[in-house]
Length: 561
Image 1: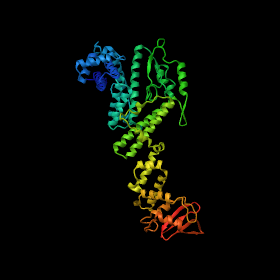
Image 2: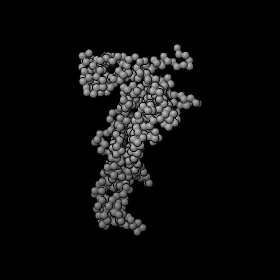
Image 3: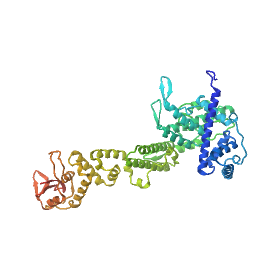
Image 4: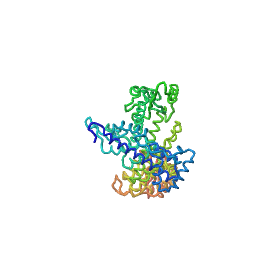
């Protein structure tokens, strides 16, 4: 029984052992998955097998576990191991050549004990919330209280951190798995007590990165104690944030790690989203990894800028822009899947896919221009497969169409409310707007006429467009009996050609006029012009009256007689 006020050493040890056992099981399951898929021990599986041995498993035990899980015979296992041993790049042939590495008890495994101690220190012996994330917490008075969702979030992140520090899994594979787990459970955003909300994938990546860095720092602190040194060298990485660039790659005392590098603060060394690690440094014995001259040259290079859309970006700003693009693409992928699950209009799904493809194209162009490697694993970490449209579909959608997609959807909805099914589909509307501008203008005119009551919705846009085209082909270009050349037609003219059941002004039916009667009136009708209205000439027959602007040749209106 633990004494109140003292840590429960036995309980902590048992929980720590359970954490490592879980990590081992996940590594074993992944090894088995790869062998079943490839039919052999892959490079990744070879690496993971070696990590199991380093974590204390005997080579004999590893072989037995794999045999049982694969359902293989001993001859089949010997063949599997022989093939791996003959591989040129195998990491440790002894593992496969029956030179048995003995089981190492946890208490005698120096690496395991060192890492376990660091985890205990990081979590204040609680062995949970390894990233020390405040996600899903609220402040009640002066006390922080975690909400129920915090348990699930911390469990996902803790598992990921242990898998990375065990060495059994690479960082990006773990991130993909965790994001998929959170997405499948419905976890989309992580809320903080400050009121800030972060996308789950962004929050998880940040928490995992921070947690791993902080546990690594704890290990290095213990190494420094064993070496009897109070000095550390901070590592260097390209495109560091400006305030970190100033101190990276140099040697500091323990006190300077705090006062200069900000160790222990959210924005400093090993703080939120910091990738820097610091290592013990023994003055007079250790050699610096980075000289002052080399650091100065790197800083000079990283200060150089490249232009993108009118903005000059240095090395740090370039990587931040790349991260921003990746985040936008992950959000767009999620939007596409959300549309598919919700069963929205197929065109909305297609345009969302095309928008994603356009983002991906821009990402390629940006990365190439900046000389940055593409990090597509950040984009595809949702593990949801292909989202982009087919090449044939993508070619139908112009950049302008994709850029204005949301605005066009709202515009179409307005027309749909007026015309109903006669508005057609959203896909047809987009193609008409960007590929058939004349028809698009006529569609707008027709919708306006229907909305004002000048045309009945029963007349149909198809009929409206057919009559307009017939007037363009049969009437426009001809000359009237007085020699006026017809140049075009007004919206009002076409309304009069079609007619309506109830004129909004007279509240009475208004008959239309046939194209043939209009043609006859222009060729043979009696022309009349009034002095007070010189911009209109009327051509009159016993069947209709057609008005034309003599200056422009535009058809103004027509009325039956």
